[in-house]
Length: 95
Figure 1 (cartoon, rainbow, N blue to C red):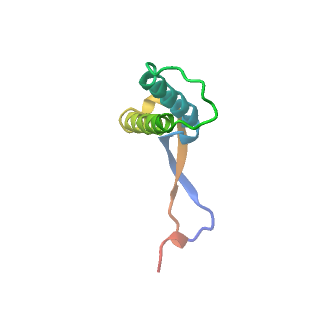
Figure 2: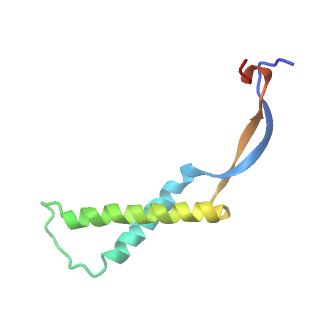
Figure 3: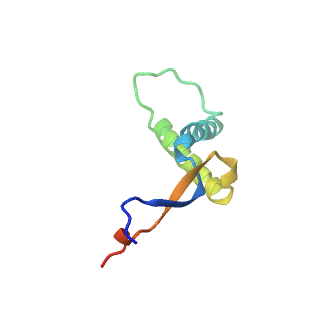
């Protein structure tokens, strides 16, 4: 049987990665706020603060690791989408 169109065999649930952007932004912002809450307020806007840049990067890393852990252990916490899987045809099998 040779067909030119792929047939959907079913669907599987996966976390919708496109919807994770806001969650990652909020999580990293919370981590940054907690880690820098006791820093003294500065008003030197003309210069880049190296410590601040390091904290921003580190907060993003912590939030990404946390979300990765939650996605792998508890995917039902996040929005899920249906991803189709296809039945292979004769054209898909190498000769």
